Image (cartoon, rainbow, N blue to C red; front, side, top):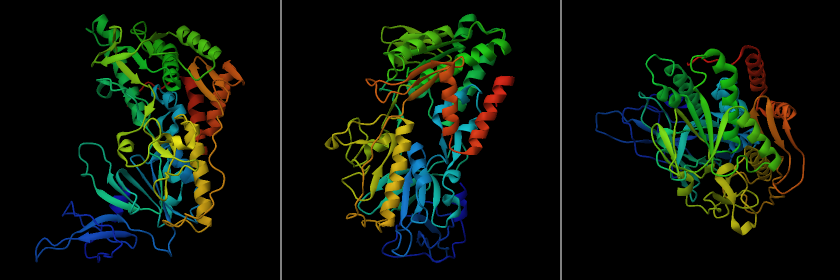
Length: 504
């Protein structure tokens, strides 16, 4: 953690002590940490002869002569779009997130089979908002929020690390003038036993990496002498649960990978690999009926087996449907929608239907001052009379863009500091207009549905033209020119040379 290392200094620095300081008890007496004008510290005597180790406590409240601080929890579509649009001449920006990048989720399925490289869908936060790495009062912290004190305008955090030989979690606190909760959502398991232990979700880059490694491992293991036919079929059976856009797109990418690469490079096992897509209702339920029928026909033609059923239990090597059918699998990908995380549920804030953080028409949490919520973790309160918006990337992005403009307006009106925006006119509320839906189904075919709602009339396309529109649209939506270049080059090299099947 670069920011953590930069804080380590000699303990001879004088501790800043004031009534406004945020303090924590020392958790690691061996750490010698510095004090900065915007950090608070605490020193504890161990004995008369010992040195005075200082404990990093956090960012103290801003002064009236300093720029107000916007703290953003999360680095998804909503949080990153907000950070991109925030005026850093008006605010310091602090991002707290367990990942230092944004994931371009519409193209994540393509990385699982080698169509795209992983870095093509990951955009570093420092590129989205350069002030985080350049401005003295703006930071990125690799951490998760563990508690929220809205009365004192403080978020309590804990560092996030992985691996076997890592430091113990480090607890600290950050004061805010404006807080934006953009923590997203987590995959829904509906309480089904064994899902978290045996299935792989497809929401982060590390999920795609895990899927890729598992898929290639099973391909190589199935070719080892002595493997029984039944075990070979199990290893090479890829099961996708959930018939939404993510599940369908992954199934389409996987069927393309099988037809164009596995059949050529794994000739000994090509007849054993299969893909099954399990959905309780209709696949792509938000799309036009004609498009759904087209998708069903094309997926079946590509070798994807469509099964209608409800998963009842998940075992290490098989899952059980509600009718008692047992489905053996070598790779299980779970894509059944999202719901609020346990942390969001635990917050003492008003909730919208479904357990999300409740917001008003201006995306404020109305029961507390200076707190906003955007993205999949938020939803309209029933008192607003508005329906809860779908958990889509375009919803989160539009909310982030709107809120950055609103905060900039508040800052220019002199309401950037804590408890100073009560009498400021906020202007027009947030209004969402659906731009349509797109999904690729493999074999150079895709669906484009430009209706504003399921009941409305509008343009809907399917086939090669839709696939071209899908690729063109997402290429232009990729966050940076660097990643657009990566994506375009990856698509070209895959078309000419095929997918990379190295297991790295």
